[in-house]
Image 1 (tube, rainbow, N blue to C red):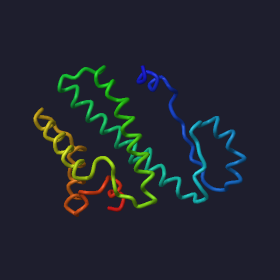
Image 2: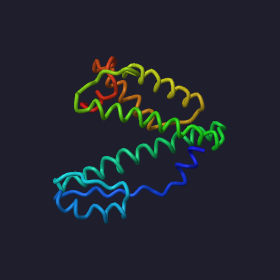
Image 3: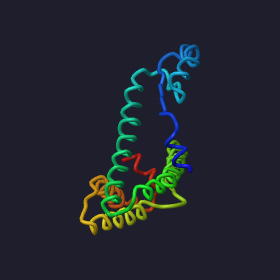
Image 4: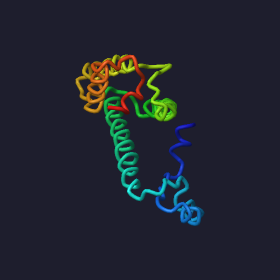
Length: 168
């Protein structure tokens, strides 16, 4: 089962090395043993704190808390944990595809989309928000997301893709 394979893997350890490229090349074999997903992140030492705040911080912690919010809502609605678990792998695949697409568009300032526009995301998020309201529960992170999508649409960006959020 794909989910069990994911769950059984060792925790990912990452060391983002900043500073001299020469020193990275010398240290890389040892660092790779300590953290197999480690990488060289450039010369600017101060980028380390920024990377830490961005990805383990803002991205991972927000995603984890969104998952907790979602799991709490699903369980309180009577959905069994094994059914929730089956939803995780396809959701992660969708996230990965969306992030890969977003990364590919960032440097090009390409806000076009072949899939969902901000209008579509807003409509879907409002629908999800109503589903939550109908259960009598709350979803603060989803509410914040609706506000952000609504703001983008109000600024005339409804026809664009999610990469437009990078320039806000």
